[in-house]
Length: 210
Image (cartoon, rainbow, N blue to C red; front, side, top):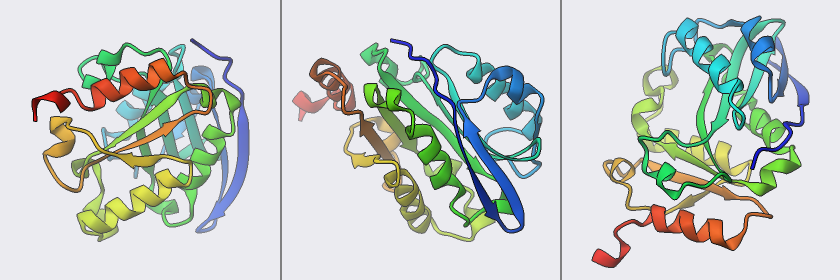
């Protein structure tokens, strides 16, 4: 189930930076942009830039960016779960993972993350998907923000909650490996009950063993 990606955009000024928030962006457009040097949570900016261009080219891939001119200062990604993760075992075409959300220190604390999610979910096609976000504390910029793991988790829950993602329990070992980790989920209005049942079966793989 692949939908036409309906483009949307908004504007936001944060810390003197006038941002265009837009997407889903094409790989060609993304290739012509530069990545801010503060975007280092997952890879060095140049490598993450290349990875996001690849995601943008996937049939289901969706990239939302916040840019100042052609400089990307924040982004969020959506794609099918990695084949190495348990979530892919559900084999659901209507399951997307919010794979990464990153905001440069230059424009933090200005609502950029929330605004990118608002743009992403303004596309009605997202009502046909289960969207998950796996929150792992080792991906969080605790040093740069000065927050502890619990404070950072509250921030992430607030940002994700602004787009309708809610906390859901799971027995996934990686998420269960630290109490601050969590699974956030948004189930679209048109997701069939069969897909929800398959997702729940993966969410609690060992529910009958307790």
